[in-house]
Amino acid sequence: MILRSVKVLHKKYSKLTHNLKGYNPIIRTRSLDDFEIYNWFPYTQRFTSEFLRRVFNREEFMKSNNVLDPFMGSGNTLVACVEFGKNGFGIDVSPLFWFITTVKTTKYSVDDFNKAIATVSNANKVEQLDPPLLSSFSKLFEKKQLNELLTLRELAYELPAKPKMILLFALASKLIDFSKAKRYGKGLHFKAGKEKTLEIKKTIITKIKKMQRSYFKFNHKGEAFPILADARKLPLKIKDKNISEGQIDIIFTSPPYCNSSDYIEMYKLEHWFLNFISTYEEFKKMSYSTIRSHTTFVNDDFDWSHPVLDEISLTLNGFKNNLWSKKIPLMILGYFDDLYKSLNEFYRILSPDKKAVIVVGNSCYSKVVIPTDLLIAEAAKDVGFRIEKIEVLRQLITSGQQWKELDSESKSLLRESMITLTA
Image 1: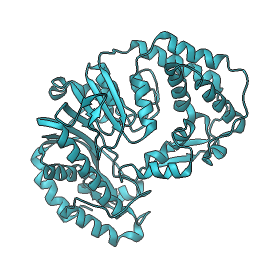
Image 2: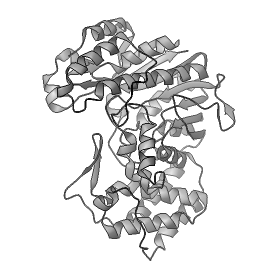
Image 3: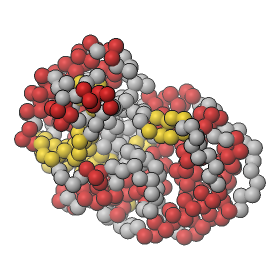
Image 4: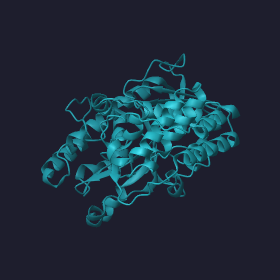
C-alpha cells in the first residue's frame, strides 16, 4: 500500500521525476563473464560497463576530473574513472571490497600475471592446513579441495606484491564456484547437487589468463584511489589529496539498498578466506560497522526524522506479526539516519554548484512501500542540497506473494532511481 504521507511526497517531486528509457537492460547484470575488468569479480550488485559508460558520457561527468564513490563496493565506478581519464576516489568499510577495487585498478606488467600463473602451474604438493574458523568452510567445501585452495593461498603470500594480489583475487573470485553454496537473495544458500568437481588449478589458471587478456585490452587513462573508510565520516585526505575543501568535482555512488541485505554476511567466505576476518568477534564488529540496511545490527540512535518515516514506522510496527523480523521498523529508521549522515559529508566536501548523483532502489515490507528515492531527496534538502531531478532507471519487483497483492500504484513506486543533487 502507499501511505497517505508517501502520496503527498510523491506529488511534491512529480515534476522532477522522469523515466529514462533504455537503462533497464544495462544497469545491472547477473552475467559472470569476465571478458573485461568490470566483471572480474562476481559481485551481482555491480554496475555494468555499459551503464557506467553511458553515465560517464553525460555532460556533468565529462566536465569533472575528481570523482568520489563513497560506497564503492566492487569498484566499478573507479574502473570507469580509469577508463575515462579521471581521478577516482573510493570509500568502503569492507577490506574485501577495498581489495577487489585495488586489484581491478592497479597497473600490471605481463610478468605479474605470468608469475601468478607459474605459481599455480608448479604447485604440485597440497598441504594439510587449518581452515578458517568460520564453520561454513567445513560445511560447504570438500576437505581435499579446501586444502588445495588454502595451499595456493599460502603460495600467493610468498610472491611479490602484484602477482600475489592477482593470485589471491583469482582464488577469491572463484571461491563460491568450488563450494556447495549459491549466493542469492540475502546471503549464501546450500545448493543440493551443485557441481563440486571443478579442477582448481585449471580453473584458477584460466581465470588469471582471462584477467590478463582483458587487462591489456583496457584503456588505462586515469587513476584510482580506494581507501578503507566510512561514508558517514569521510577522511580528510585520500592519497595526500585534501577532500574536505571542495576538491571533489562530482560524487557518483549507490549506497546499500534498504532491503535487509548484509554484504559482510553475503561475502563472508571471501572475507574469511583472505584473512580479512579471523574471529567471530571481528565478523560481528565488521557487520556492525556497515550502513544499517540490515537487521544484524539496529539501534535507536537517530539524528534525522521525517513525517513519512514516522508513518512508515508506526504502520509497520502495527504489522510486526507479518514481518520476517520485528527489527525492520527500527532498521528503516537507522538506514535513513545513516544516509542523512552520509549526505552531510557529501555536502561538506563538494564545492558550490557541484553535483552528487545517487542510484538507489525503493523497497517494500508487508505491502508498505518505502520510497527511498523520495526520502533521500528530503534528507538531502535538509542538508542543503538542491534537488535537480529524480530519474527512474527501471521498475523493481518484490517477493512473489507480496507482488500479487500490491495495487498498481504501489508497483509503480517500486523502482530504481538516479537522484541528482547540487550543492
